[in-house]
Length: 64
Image (cartoon, rainbow, N blue to C red; front, side, top):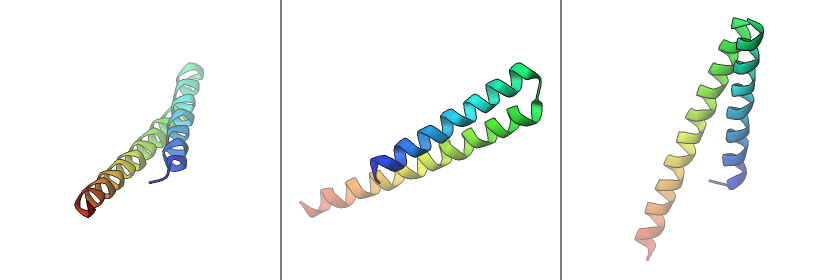
């Protein structure tokens, strides 16, 4: 997995957190919920990246 995907997904998580905090600070529950949903989606993408990286590492280990 490329490093740019990791950075992109981390950025998505941060943006979601910002929306959540802003929504909570302003009493906008819809924005807060959207932020939490975006964080969850980013975390799932990060987990998938980690699985792909582990699979690639395992594949490389058997090549040696």
